[in-house]
Length: 167
Length: 283
Image (tube, rainbow over the protein chains, first blue to last red):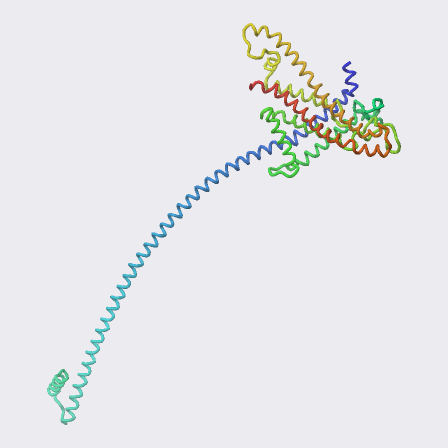
């Protein structure tokens, strides 16, 4: 009876086995070429996204730390720079002061030296003039007197002339 | 008058081999087997073209297939849990995709409406006796094959997860944590319930295959009847042509829905059977 009903619906072993094989091939194809690789790639992508999220968190943390470090370094550099500028300013002022004092001293020395040189030059010139005058007086006296003057005469005349010039 | 009209246009219960092949070595090649082979080719081509160059950043084909697989996997995982889903997803996904494509293939123009029958002029038939193409799921050989494969794998996975002792205990054991003399009174009752349970398990392949076959076969017949409705009521030729175009439209949408629902029902029932037999340990 059952066999009769199944036969009415066209169920028989050859067709059943043919359809069974076709369905098993569908199962194999989908499982081998679709589900297995796709589930694997979905899992891999999920892991990568998770890793990406973790990395983003890590990078955010590192960035915040780096920002803090940067701010700290910047603040320190700023302080150092200010200190350096201050020191430099102070050094500069001291240097300027020293240089100025040195220049004043040098200029005073130069003036003193110049004054000394002028004085000595003047004295030298006066001595020269005196010497020339004495010589002139002796020569003139000799010519006027018409005789040759002795060394004693010359000494006396030069003394007189010098005393006159000093007066 | 209407009661005497032949309202079913084509009502061959079984798949048929075209007459010119019946005495050849291809006698096994019925119109349903041909359609199943075409659907198999279609699935293979689609899958291979979508997953040939599988990559982390998917192309359009891979993306589409991933969406289908991911969506279906998520739905099954919600019922069966991760472990059982990973084990059974190949079967469940194959069942759903194959039944869905087979059901919808039957709605293509020409399937069930081109073939051999009573001649009614040049390249025209008044009724079809042997269509060239018939949906794979409208052949009971196919629906039984799917049911048998599903139930064999159901039994294998159930034994793998629960083991034979727990399985028999679940079938025939006294439930409800009873102890004492009442336990002995309930033993015969639960043995009887176990026998009923075994019968219901044995009937599952039959109910699964008949449900799918009946729905798809009935849908095919209904569409054929709607296409031939003018002819059945002896309407004039022009009206027959107009009616054959307009009347089947709502039924096509209905069949689209039924095709999807039947794929879903078949797969969901296997999921429920697996869930009932493999997850009771956790409760």
